[in-house]
Amino acid sequence: MLTELVEAYASTEQLLSRVETDEGEKLSLTPPYQAKWATTTDSAYRAILYYNKVEGGADPISCSMIATAVILPLDSFPKGVRQDPVRFESAWISKTGRYLNASINLMTGIADSKDKHHLLAIVDDSISSNADGTRTQWLRLYHHQGGIPEYYSQRTYFSIPLHNVKADSVYLSVNTYNGVVTRKMKIK
Image (cartoon, rainbow, N blue to C red; front, side):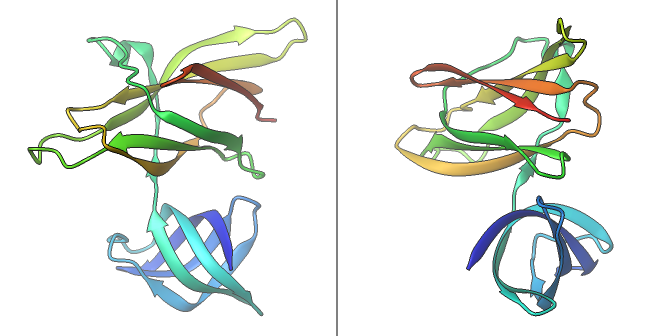
């Protein structure tokens, strides 16, 4: 069994027929995978796919949608940038260079109201020019615990599309329970 972050394509409502992996490999799903969350025909979704490789494609076992976080300018946060702590696992750039992916653990529990939820976003702090002529975009994870109790941890994956990044590398800063973690990753 293999596990990949993918762009999953819905050929019809709730039916995924093919994927493109972060390695750039295009696979047909045989049989097509029924995903209730894929509600729009002819659309691409960011997902994590568990599958067995078969001749001509992939035999899907499970496929779950993951969040896509758009980079927002600092002035999008007039009340300030919340950085409630998370447990950081890893961050990496996809081989295609299309996404910055991250795995974190959110502390969670059963909230006393359906209105309470975690809020995640990516803050664009700045772009700096380096001595070698390259540019670095400084990003920060916005996290608002949102009144959710912190009883146990839940792994969460998210992807940041990089098509609008005008830099050669990114610094991703994440506040954790053990202090701030920063990762520098080359894009090009």
